[in-house]
Amino acid sequence: GRLRELGYLFQLETLLSTRGDEWAMLQDTQGVVQMIERVQLMMLPANEDAPDGVALRGGAHMPVLCFAPRELGFRDAARASAAGLKPGVMLRVRPVLLSQGINEEQSVANLMQTHTAEQTALNERALAQLNEFQAAAEALARARGEACFPPELLR
Image (cartoon, rainbow, N blue to C red; front, top):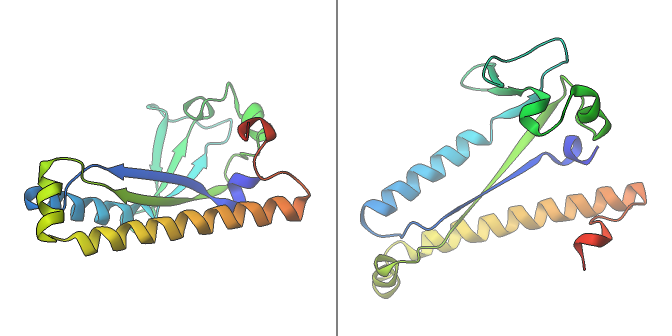
């Protein structure tokens, strides 16, 4: 279904400032997001199980996180399949990172313009990714003659 075609939207939000040690942590977080872009998700077939609920397959360059249906909130593989999650099918992860420092360090960073252009660029990129995801979801829904968002969500 939609999940297979659109991928799994994984939104991260950080409250780190763009000043001092927090700036370095924000840069590290950006690196992690780039790594997550290579990750694929897969539901394990019914005859397979992961001792801890999640198994790692593939390698560092193309990791695949394999989940048991119960780890994804389903009673069994049949219920997950009914929701469009077929065992063995890879799902793309689409990570989006937003940043907004909210402490006094960010106030100083804003005043001194410390890495604020980089934070703006990061958030503009995130907004573009979210807009792209929404446009893809709307196009898919139109192609199927469905509502993009269920009416109960729009109330």
